[in-house]
Amino acid sequence: MTTVRAATIADAAALAELGARLFFETYEHETPPADMAAFLAEAHGLEQQTRELSDPGIATFLADCGGELTGYTQVRIHAIPNGVAGDAQVELWRLYVDRRWHRRGIADRLLMRALEAARTFGASAVWLSVWERNPPAIAYYRKRGFREVGSHAFTVASSVYRDLVMVRSAADVEI
Image (cartoon, rainbow, N blue to C red; front, side):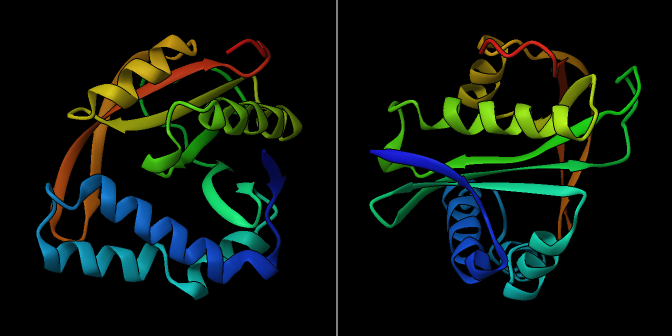
């Protein structure tokens, strides 16, 4: 049985490994190796994960199945991109599930925890960005009530990609 729990500082090393591995597996075929290595070192290193887990404006949750981390999500209070209206917006910053654990409801449980955290932050809505060339993720978010409101650039070292910006109500708990 997979449980979803709040991450702690003690999880920093495991989160750094999990985050780097899942990002790499998701985008390895689309990102030049040097850019991937630079991004992973910056965004998923132990020091960065320790900072994120210490930041009161970031909530991190881990999916755990018998001691094996199967996915994670992070929400954060962050600058609102163009196209996202309203007050107290919170970003669904990261939501990843290990491919071996797909289609078992883990993403939905992580999303529910993320929405709960967004409401705790006082958010009226949650926004996210998703790579425009990731149809399965886009379809998942659409089915969970997110709608496209714009786009922006996402940079991985020297590579620049176009992400769709999607938004949904934080108050609506149905996914």
